[in-house]
Length: 365
Image (cartoon, rainbow, N blue to C red; front, side, top):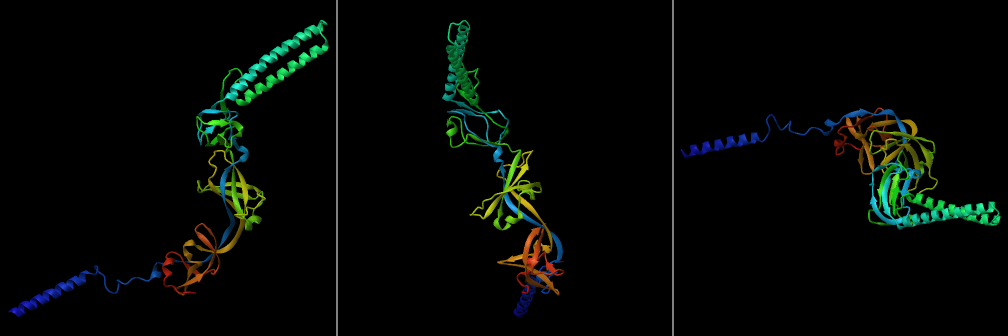
């Protein structure tokens, strides 16, 4: 009886163990089909073919304001800034009030103008009186000539003081010690380097109160390396792209190439002037100058076929159904494809999608 119970327990334990072992594999799995598939089963091959490649020199560049249209605004007289009416980025018109300055120079100029007015009137009356006396023979002609010279001198001094007030922007008919700082041109405010309450020292200031630029025309300034200097000349047609506006191009010509080489970077400055009517191009934007140098035929493959392994660049070719690694030299990349200058022949089939799966077990050339 004891033996029969032990036998039944053994059979039940064995059955449970076999059931647990079967549950470790997913339904339908077996030792044969659970093995991993070959790595190259996910690899797709394409045939190497010749294609026309546009030869293009790409120069890194930046957008800059035209220096001839860049205005650094200095106060016309010393004084304290009462107000600044603009901020960086504002569009302004010619003659618009930019700031207001409380200046003793304005009061002094106004005083000089008033004195000159009085002196000019007095000198003119004296000359008129001498003319009447001369006509009646009461004075010598020399006396009239001296009086007339004094009147002319007084009028010249009056004109000088009036012009001084005009330069300061002060109305000659409204005495004041406040000077409105007016915009000399239309444009956009690039920077403001002062604040209300500061003292200004007129034209001997090291820094301007603000900088204004007319951006209707801008410069695209790029760098060309010493080895490529022969490929760019004034008048060469180019296209310009800007990082801020992908997909857009601006046609232009090279205006000038600098005559001095930068000894640190071994580059020359190349300048392209562009019309900018909508003012989309802003100073300091990153840009590129593309120089068209013609075209040539070359073998190309998709960029996904090229693998970089340290200093080597390789592709995998189909060698009678077996992937084989080959070292290659690449050229320029265009529209998702890359030029192969050496290491591969037309008609060979190279691995593209999944080529990186072959790096671990492919044969070496």
